[in-house]
Image (tube, rainbow, N blue to C red; front, side):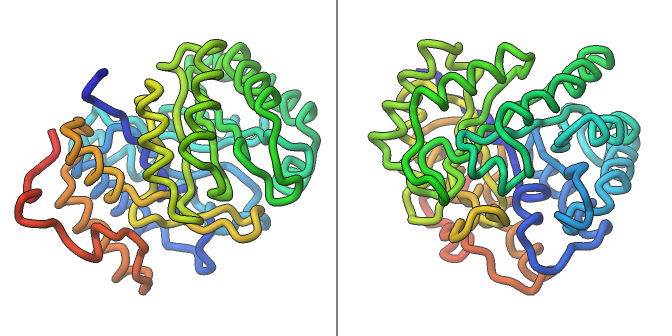
Length: 311
């Protein structure tokens, strides 16, 4: 198996969107710089959503413009890709104006979660994607797709595997270069993850699949390992485990990036990210937002046998 994985850093979007107090543009820009300096090559930096619904994402355009300016002045490596979430055509137009490198769209695997999250049916959400993808194609902007509540829904409980596979396939065929399969409320088991991805990769190339696991019940790392063992090589995570879904009752944060890096480093799997630097990022952000983040590795520190940089 390939001994390399890609980590998609979510803290600036999926992480901060669930914080009670919005974080300033200046702190968000500095966090983006620090993450890039630590070696992250793909960072989701904001979202073009309604400020009255997700006030934490207000100012995303300003954050993106300032970060891209840092990239022009070489304070951020040119290889780093920055992405933003867009819910519809209007959000896509804002994203284009900001100059962001990539965009992401999100759909739900259940009707109840779709209505709660974006106030429309699954079918209506896909109709909204059509002009987004048309604009993306015209402007040559890559589009990543997210599919939420793939392993369990806070409103409907069990989720149909067939529904997840059909919707993921639809996102891919519409033009998403990659589809991230989400355990939004952290209910999946490793066996369930193995079964899901084994069936998904029959319909989609496994290199086009990613895993997005929340650590609500402490199983995220086990689920990431299970997905890795089926051939998945792209995983979403958030600095310090920051985040959660405001529309999923009981959903705590994403899996902590530092914990994911520590696990893969111990397995001899390359992430390309400097783990000690990311632990420093955790401590820096914790001080800025006056909140201890949940990463076990950042709390405990690195053991002497692991004090090295991931390569």
